[in-house]
Length: 252
Image (tube, rainbow, N blue to C red):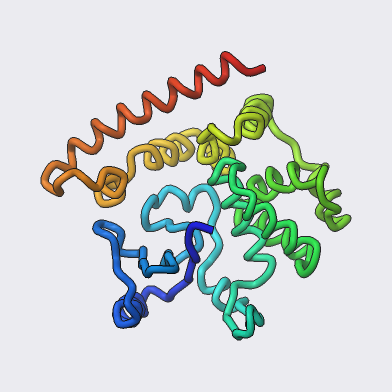
């Protein structure tokens, strides 16, 4: 894993930052929610999907944070009692990360597979995913798990009942076939959004986030030159689109 995600209540962020500083963690420039030590990288969240970075993500699905806190549970991990989000919430969280990493990251598949096999209530997982409008990320992940693991019967049946448009089907197949190189996760996530205007707003804000977030992509730029970051981002995206088009033309 690259990092460990910690969920923190917004009103406790200052206390957590002080505590981690006292424990020897450092914060990289322009990344106030990342804390580094010699052995660990901690990513501090106030919601599950960092919606404060890209506010349009709320259109692609939302899990009320107070419900997440209410459903938390204690788990014994490596001899420690740790507070964790509930199993069904963790399964949805894993499925969204499967998608956001464009199916490249095996660890999120493993987490989802273990949760489905050992602890989740399938009916409750489906209910929560649909209530949060996050059923598509769950469906995509289960679609690719199904040939390799035995899913709970209710999840397998639900997955078979889901449908996709021809355009969505094409993107899903392309994303999976070229998962080591593509970056189509956010494009696929946009299919969870109803309405063309909201979907376009989500894609635009994802590609061109607010200055503080975009400057994290180009940390070498001095802060006063933040408008230049948008020009660099445009060049970066054009190069990525070019690579994607080449891959599409080369592969069936």
